[in-house]
Amino acid sequence: MPSHKRKGISPIATVIVLVITIVTAALVGYLMYSSTARSARTPIVNVVGQPTLYADGSLYVTLKNDGTAPINMSSATIVVQDKSKNPVPFKYATDVANNGPKTLDPAKSGSYVFKAQGTFSLDNIPDGALATLQTPDGYQLSFAVAKP
Image (cartoon, rainbow, N blue to C red; front, side):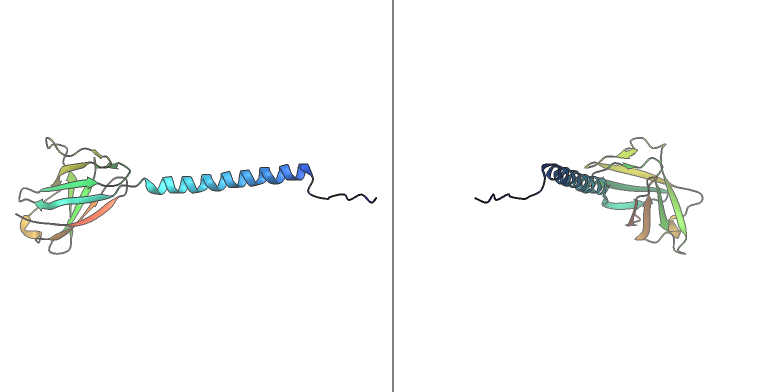
């Protein structure tokens, strides 16, 4: 009787292929997780209500962080365009009692007061002027301001 020998992959080759497959799957899974986790932690800040600019150079704005990462407000600046399209800077007011939190955590809101820097005249700012919030971590948000 003739012997029928079955030929196949040797056991060592099977183990090597299995180890390579597992390492590759683990590496792909890690890369997918790390890129998703990094991109998912971002602040999403929205203006609540109408930001208002007063004659004393105070700009009142309420912000809400709908994102998943905190945002640093401690040295934030708001730049408002005047009638000549020149920037008028406003700084986070550290001397105002009960000013909004220096760090706006996710799912939280805060009411903030920003003070004009340098000379300021309410007459030079049009109603509905464009304003841009700039935070130390690079976040920017544009909105319109109203005058009372």
